[in-house]
Image (cartoon, rainbow, N blue to C red; front, side):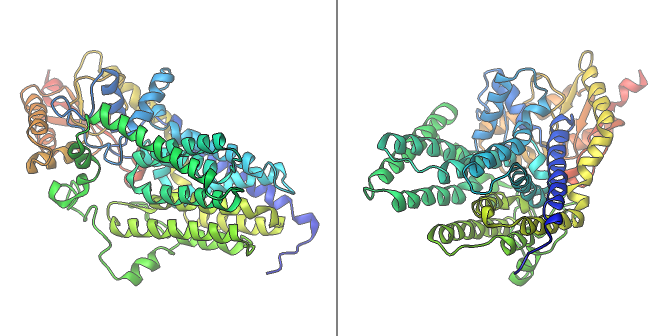
Length: 529
C-alpha cells in the first residue's frame, strides 16, 4: 500500500489526532478518579476490604467477615490497602481507582522509554503512541478499565511486566538475576490480581527467555539465571501471601478464587434477578461468536462489542518486517489472543471485551516496535480509523465520561448528604461502600452473592454463621437508612419493600450497569416520627 501524501498534510492531522486521543484518555481517567460514586454496583467492595484491613481483620477470616468479591485474586485488595496507607489523604473512590488514574501516565512513561533510542523519534510520535495505547484499552474494555476493580490494576502491572520483559537484555549474571527477580515479582502480582491473566503472563515470561537465547553469548547461562530468579521470586511472593492471608489453607484459596465460579457454589447459574445466565459459555454457534468479535459497536447494557475489528485495523497499518523478532512478536500476540478468545467464550455471559486487555497491550508493544518504519501518513490513517471506531462507540466510550463530568457536582452532593447522615443515623449497605470513611461493623460485601452462598453452604459453617448474624442484626435492629446499588440480598430487598421509602437517588451513576443509580432508602417509622 502506498501512503505517500503531500508534505503539508503529513503532520497537522497527526497533531490533531494526538490532541484528541490525549484529551479522551486523560479526561476518561481523570473524571473517573475524581467521581465520588460507584460506576458499577459492587465496585466499592474492595474499599470495604481496605477498611477491614485497616482494623487488623483478615478479610478471609470467615468467623469475622463473609467477603467474597475479591474473587479474581488476593493481590488487588493488598495493592489498594497499600495505596490507602501511603496516601491517607485520598478519598475512597480515589484509592479504589488509583490504577485508573495511573494508567495513561504509565503509557507515557513506557512510550518514552521504548521510543527513546528509536531512529526518527519525535515528541509527537511519543505522544501519539502513548495516547493510542490507552485508547486501545478504552475502546476494547469500555467503562471496565475505569472502574476500581482488578482490571485497571492488571493493565498497569501487565504493561510494566511487558516492558520489563521485552525492553531489557542484561549482559551479566547479576543483571540477569535482577531482571528475573523484577519480572517474577511483576508477573506474580499480575497473576495474583486476576487469575485470567495467568496465560498471558506466562507467554510474556517465556518470550523474555527466548530473547535471552537469541542474545546470550554463552548459550543458556544468562537465561538460566533469569529463569531461576524469576521462579524463585514468584514462589517466595506466593508463599508469603498464602502464609499471612490463608495460613496455607489451599482449600480456602481455591474456594475464593476458582470455586467461586463453579455451579456447585450456587451463584454463577443466574444473576441476582434471574434475567440472563451468568458465568456461562456462549450458547450459540461458533460462527456467531466469531462474528460478534468483529462487530464494531458495543451495546450500553453489557458493553459487549467486537474488540477484534480494532486489532484488524492495527495489524493492517503496522509494517511487519520479516525478521525473527517480529515473527516472535506475532506468535506471542496471537497466542495471547487465543487465550483471551477462549476465556471470553467460556465466560461470555459473565465477562466482556475487557478480557482482551493483555492482548491489546502486546499489540501496542508490537506497534511501538515497528513505528519507526511507519511514515506520518500511515500513522495518520491508523489514527483516523481509530477515531472512526471511537465515533461508532461514542455511547460506550465518550458519553459515560461526559455524563460523569456534567453530573459530578450532583454526585458530590449525593455523597455529601449520605455521609452527613452517618453522624446521627445508622446506614446499611450490602454493595456500595464508597461513602464510608471507616468500617461500621460490616460483615458482608455482596448481599445477593453472599445470600446465594449461604443457601448452598459452599463456604462452610463459619461463613454461614457470619452471614446469619448479619441478617439477624438487620432484621432485629433495622438501620435508619439503606444505600443500595440494586444488588442487595433478597432478605434486604424484602425488608426495604416492607419498611422503607426511597428518599434520594444518585445521578444515574452506575453507567457500567446500563445507567442505573445508587438509591437511598429511609425507614418509614422515621418519616412518621
